[in-house]
Length: 436
Image (cartoon, rainbow, N blue to C red; front, side, top):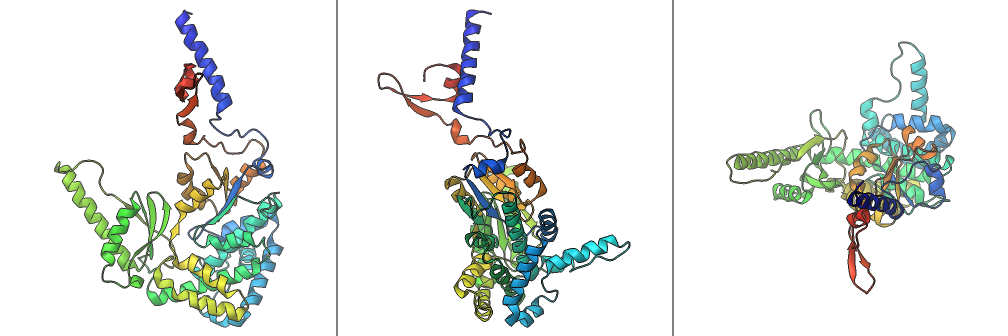
């Protein structure tokens, strides 16, 4: 080996050792379980999803795996007691009632009988706002109780942040009350869902056979799309226009409103895309063109739209009759149904709070998939803790997901040198051993 080759070989080894000491490129998954690390003080956050994910199958999995049927039945019965004064009014909006634990048991019996028809409510009923909104909340309560049974009780080992996407704020409220008001909150979730269905039909922000009141739009600059939406809304009452209701990622948003207005927005965007494509083909412009991708969402009601503002008064009045906190009922109704959602901002605030891990408490792993892009390069891990795979990540030694180092760790850093000079230390200077 020549002297020059030996020099660079020694420098590379020295730099490699220094990199190993100064910075971990990934968090090791070989030291104990993730739950032990969180109990030991590693900061974490809780996140709760909104509409869009199947909830009854997730609820069944959580309740069976963790023996939660008795506790969940008690919560459902407590909520029914609160709702007794308005039971007949709810029945008009929700003829199937709300008894998901019984539905799970009925389906189990039907599965055991050869040729038996599917038991319980239809798929359409399960996705209706009046049923799915409390159903999602109950599933998240089950996930919280399962997490506590696995050793991580948020009331004992507090998270640094708790965030909720849309109706996930109801579950965040359950964390704040340490599970002491789950029955009241489930009753409130049923009131909010029923009011959403009632007002959504009146105001026309409801799904039809071939149309939807919510459109996911990806590959788009939110501000440019907002300008298009506002341009098309000129001359319309806010309740009748499309709005940009949710910002799910830096280039992914959700539009909400009457299906006809959403169709107008999509047509206008497709027209702009075609115009810019022709200009680029004619060499009149360069670069990428405006090309958003539209995806209809399988929801009954157009959430986060001004047309649902009437629900705030309806839920407030129902809450008074049921003996629930009217002020809290109004605030949560507005947050779940009317106010716009900035999920990117919520995730950023969680990272700023110091969370090293985000535990997604469902339903399912939809929120994990939606949030993974926002935490990429931040040095923060996310686990779908409401799923069996997420449970393995939490409880099995060596199964902790590896999290790449934050991109900021690769930034050049100023260092003080002998003699008072300020130099710059980079990955290259560490690798080669050369003085910065």
